[in-house]
Amino acid sequence: MSDRITLKINADELIKSALKEDISSEDVTTNAVMRGFVAGEADLICKQDGIICGLPVFERTFKILDEGVEIEFFKTEGEQVKKGELIAKVRGDIRVILSGERTALNFLQRMSGIATYTAQTVKLLEGSKTRLLDTRKTTPNMRLFEKYAVKVGGGCNHRYNLSDGILLKDNHIGAAGGVKKAIQMAKEYAPFVRKIEVEVENLEMCKEAVEAGADIIMLDNMSVEDMKKAVKLIAGRAQTECSGNVTRENIEKIKSVGVDFVSSGALTHSAPILDLSLKNLHPVEEK
Image (cartoon, rainbow, N blue to C red):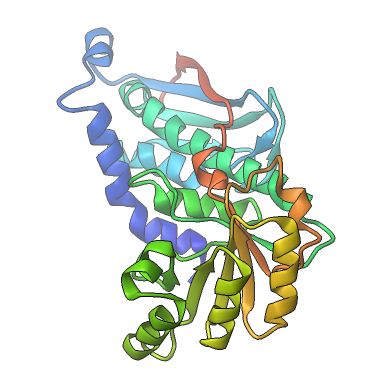
């Protein structure tokens, strides 16, 4: 199933929740100045360079309020956009455009910002085999949109939620009584189709994870030198991932390590928004 279809069938309730957050009973300002239907048009304008992401969500936000709203897009999902470019025209009931504007822009700016930041980070890994992953460090109730934006930006998704895969982190290992015991318990409990990933913090833990049969070993907050030693120790017996405060500013140093994946919470928790604006709202003649 494509990402666009997944987004389409799961997004409505989350968009409605965001709209309810912004309109608890009425849009009192709009209702004060617009007492009835007037057809209008507004321009969606890009205010900085980046990658546009979230156009289907932007459109759906208005459509939930009024199916009669029409949006003409001049850019496609995932396309590079430049400051000053016209992205779309929104046409419909002026009351709907005014009431849906902020929520629609919040989604679009956030998703475009993540896609832009992700694309910039992926570019820094060019020339290596390492693929960029996101994490579960997402905004509550925004995970669907934020992980979608990572993929639009050229990154890959790690597990979507706690039901999606086994990742034995430090506290799981502590609760189980050690790396070997945690892996053994996971193998006994989990279906055979589930891979088992283990977070390790040093070479001793790494050796124990390999010998216990981990499928993926995450090298967490280890030095570049120790990560290189760990990759050599693992020697292809498990897939490798590194993590720990990875940002666009420091990711290049990981290129030489040789891990299969690098995960970065910064993709979703630290990406700035892409500045976009809905401007020039004016009445038009009905078609």
